[in-house]
Length: 225
Image (cartoon, rainbow, N blue to C red; front, side):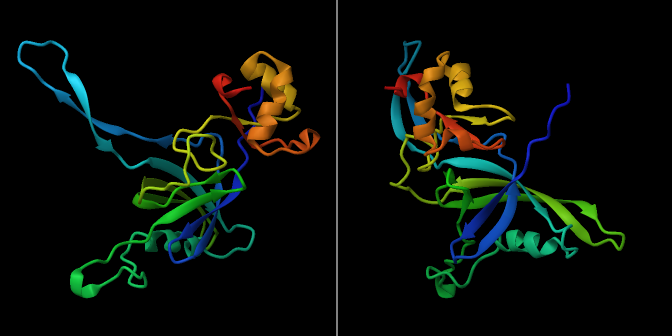
């Protein structure tokens, strides 16, 4: 059996200053991490301490992005240099004040189609690898691994589904060749008639127009009506 490679999808990063950085995204997996701080109330003579909530932590996620300029023959560093710039202090930000040492790199958001719009995040680490060169040694393709951490609280993020931006998203399914919503419904729910719940969660108006490679949010059984 031949395993089909996951098709890269167009995506982009938007910076705090409004710069758009186009990229390619492998949508086979996209997850967020959230955590809370809990402190044990240790009491002498007791085996298991009770826990006290000590506040939340910032959300975090990682990205694996691809940049490719082989079709135009220009250097891919035009894109990777923009990423590297995001690690530098941005003196154009309104919050910048040299006299108070208030400089910082900008926050970014990641956007893919109409499904994924992340909260404002700072890039905590960036690893760029050039993977393809022209005969003259010009870098034409690069992969970038990013680790990102939530910049500030975001009231627009709810715990419903990743289309509105969620730190605890639903299961995600990538549509394969020949797959239909009723078959996907049968796979996850054991009931092909539940396909409307998947359509509603992904704002699908024409189930017959479902394209291979599309990333679908799959609601949990407990959320079905």
